[in-house]
Amino acid sequence: MTRDEPIGRRVARWRVRRRMTQQMLADRLGKSKSWVDKVERGVRSLDRYSVIQEIAEVLRVDPAVLLGQHRPPPTSGLDGVDGIRAALARFEAGGTASADEVGRHVAHAWLTYQHAHYAQVVRALPGLLDAARGLPGGDRELLVQVYRITASVLVKLGEADLGWLAADRAMAVAGGDPVLAGAAALSVGQALRALGRDRLALAATVAAAHQVAQPGVRGALLLQGGLAAAGCGDPCQADELIDWAADIAESSGACDPHRTCFGPLAVDLARVVAAVELGEGDEAVCRHERVVRREGWRRLPAEYRAAYLVDAARAYLQLGDLTGAGRVLVDADRVAPAEVRCRPVARTVIAEIARGGLAGVGVTRLATLVGLIR
Image (cartoon, rainbow, N blue to C red; front, side, top):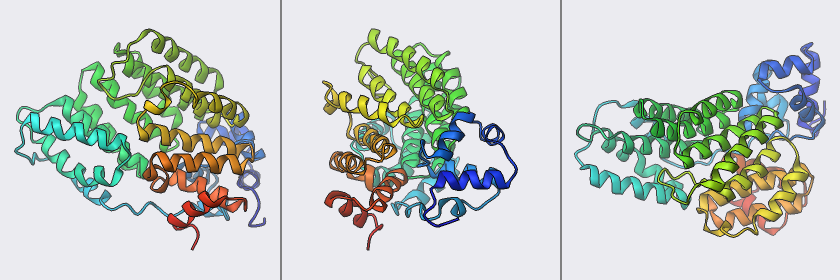
């Protein structure tokens, strides 16, 4: 077994060594046999470390054995996560601010997050969590929003377990309110997908979508469900859920009170990401090159655009187009530098491009900035 052996071949080798068929491995991972086959043949790339960890656990090996030279890049090093962890561990109320004041801080935190200024959000969240919990009589909507922001930024920074905890708190606070519960379920789905638990994410988001009538929340839940289905290797269900979301997008207005960014353009972007998750890089690239020319693309929040572009870079990698992947990744860095420089998944993509030996000046600069090249 050479150090340069593709990771998919390593998976196949250890699967055989453990006397497992592709179907047996697929069943234990909650994936399809087709998904495992594509991974082993290198048609589908393993670019989520959480999924590599899950495979390693099933095969009873250390993740480093599967990774070889594909070791995950270092973590973001963004300070402040321990402060959020401590705030989540506190249950007592800890603030004297009014609901109006907390509401203004929550709105500012959302805008800061959507501009991908994650360091600022991380610094603000411990105090915001304490303040929202301390509101007299409790304000479920504000507290759900704070937990959702917390979950979102933690998932971005590779702290998906802690993000899932925050999302679960949002669900608990939402209680019987179907719209708040649906908004919280969006965060649950995102965290579970980041953990590689696509089947659980699929069940959670589709169940929530059936309970909520608000178009933006329902449509966003269906898109999350579609991406989870794609992560499970189920293209039929992924298409069905995204098509359902498309119908909602066509008939709903532009109002977005729950900050889902849902609409026709979000549906088209989700189709690209679903194709990436299914290992269909050619379809993903074809769709991507059309969708970024759509009206409204530049009006999406910087965080949303840059996160999508990181996924688009993965599509080019699936085709072996390192130049295209590098170009898209540099575009993402121009839109929202923190999205590329702080997210583990983006750093993994940088490492893959740099490892190919054809990295341009922009990617080489990024690799240096995140510590992959010294």
